[in-house]
Image (cartoon, rainbow, N blue to C red; front, side):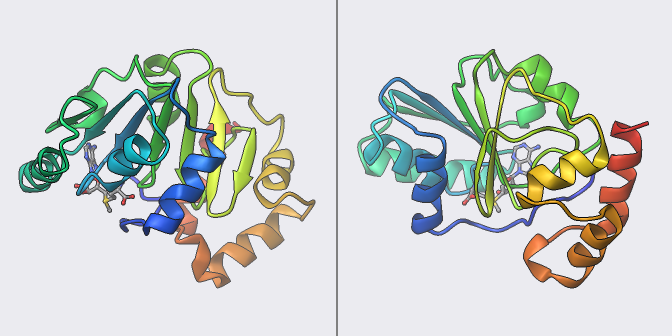
Length: 197
Ligand SMILES: C[S@@+](CC[C@H](N)C(=O)[O-])C[C@H]1O[C@@H](n2cnc3c(N)ncnc32)[C@H](O)[C@@H]1O
């Protein structure tokens, strides 16, 4: 079952820089954008942060083509690879930073644990992976390192999301009322039940 815990939106350049700063992107890094759309994150990662390689993965053919055209036009084809495929079927092993601003589904946690190598930084948008402790955050971006550290309880996880203690029921109430979360509350509860059972 696919779920959507993050919005299907394109990031502004300002936010892209913010998330790359959070990940401390540098020339040592290989950056992957899982669902790259027009490829802007890869372009900024290479041209402003100097990452040595960037890979944008986009399952829609028309968007992947557009991203590839933009990369070629900017003369960045040697540094940026655009893959027209589903990132769940893609080899992510080279990534030292991976960004997914899109979604979490019931298989995401296991998928990242199996596909990303040790010390890789995963950045998510709007909500961290359910049950995973954060390494750092700059809202709306959350950074978690492989191997993931798991929260011992829902309350501990809520505290890491909010950077403060809050009863779990109040957290759900806040999410339901605050459009900033872009989160489907039923799905979130289902994920929490599954991860903490
Ligand atoms: C809203 S765009 C975000 C583009 C860019 N990452 C950004 O933040 O500006 C999300 C993209 O992810 C793509 N996408 C969604 N699921 C995907 C999957 N499983 N594999 C590859 N691309 C996917 C969508 O087609 C869409 O173009």
